[in-house]
Length: 553
Image (tube, rainbow, N blue to C red):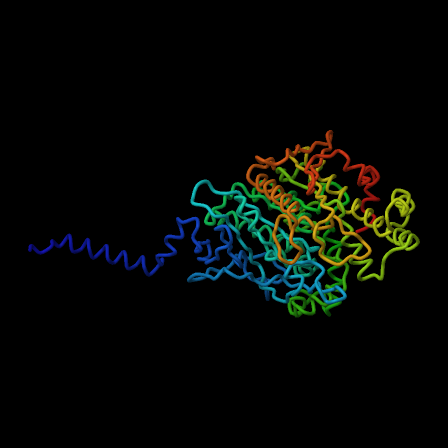
């Protein structure tokens, strides 16, 4: 046999060396993952992650860092990039929620909300992680993406409280996000502003949310998602924050549609951000309460306060202390001003509320924690306390005698003033610039979160979430409720895909206009549009008076 030529020997040696180097740098399973949309191993811009299989052939990736841990010197600073890691990161278990007190307030010590974070609370500041659910698929066009911001008054909750599998099964890549909460997420203080490049502070939680959107833009393609079809959505505080990103110049181009569930900020009566001056004054009071009174050393002093002490003081403060504020670059102007000046990220919106929003709060704060139920006299006294000079008008519009109980009268006031009419006002405003689809969730038998012997819960605040994000923490849905859930997930998925929720096999959903004022009713017995929403919720009473709308925060 003739000896191989020198050229052939060198070629084989080069091929062997190339294969060896490849095996040392990219393990074979990872190499396949780069082109396999169903692989449990995916490469992000910071390293490889290994997820888990879920029902119906989908995948979930838990606890992916999208920013550096905001600890030590990074406490109360804008989010920084996450560090790279070597090897394959386990992404099969959720990360810690951001620091918060447990919401175990029921008389039996149970949580008042069904999320795991509400039961456990957290003291872990290393919490800027997200979770990704993907459907079963085998290549093809990249899928629409839903980035979900949890509710909880910007003080409670976690992305891991939400199971994105049902929406993923509809062909959507679902991303749920942690963001800094309470004082750690929204404290403004003159000392923090002084060390900032834009001489402002606060809104770190909003910055975290935008950092997650940037992560999605860089990485979601590796999970089968389409970075050019990103829907930003949320419920309650998450919806109000979504509203703020619509007017944030630093969020431009990061999302292409928006979903607001029971949270408003733009049309009047919803969340109103504080001014930077007001936020700094409240922040100064907070700093004094943890012993940081010297302006010259306040920033360092605050960063040295243990997390448990911050939470202890946070638990005694007013929720409005942790409202976002204007001034930081992320929110330079109020939503009202941004819309008036046309400086908004106008995108198609799906927006709405639940029919009996405030019954949950009445049951919790009046019945379970306040010694309720209300009597006609105590109802009137409570309205006078909360509405001051406007109380007579409110009692005239909502007399206790017009409702089955004073508790339900009080619930109607809170529902209409805080949720229903602000949601409609946002829809009216948005519809001048982009398509809007408005809804009211109206299942009177939705599974309750808490026992409510004196206040039938009806379609209470957050009751629609179980129809979009399955949970074992509540009673199972009935067959009729499961059909409604299927309709809703089809609507939400279609909206994420196209900006229009109308999908084959679902009842027609008309686009919202101020002239038609048609809102889609979502109920187990019938899904249909109504023009009675404004009258049912006394919106002509609330809408003409910004002072009255904002009478209670």
